[in-house]
Image 1: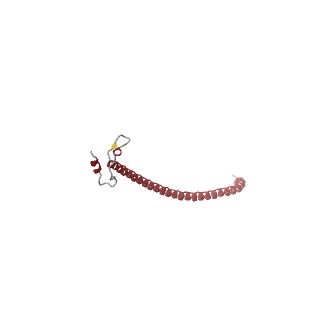
Image 2 (image 1 turned 90 degrees about the vertical axis):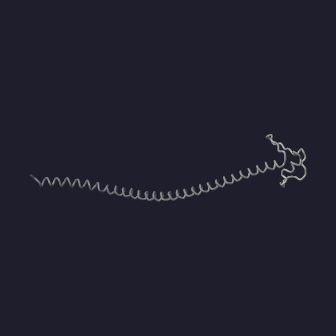
Image 3 (image 1 turned 180 degrees about the horizontal axis):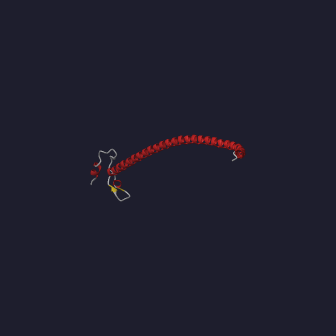
Length: 144
């Protein structure tokens, strides 16, 4: 290829230089052993890298948007669960207080009944004596 063919190869690009390119700058080696013969090939490679970089950036943008939405939904769900938990805890607390109040009333009733039963024990022993006396009187009155 001659100098004129290389210069005419990307003539529509605004990135190319107007002046002829010296021989030392025409070939740029890359680390993997592939050499670019002219600037248009370099510009094409840069365009490919830019497109790939843009695609990667868009992928990351989409990924972060998805993560942000998932986090938002998770936070919203967690908030809803916490509100339900708070409501359930409040109702449970009311029920426990009601049960404790009823339990205290029951215990107090049992204590009062126990006190009343102590006085009934004395009455019961008196009734035993009355029953024994009644039985003795009946024996005497029913003499065969």
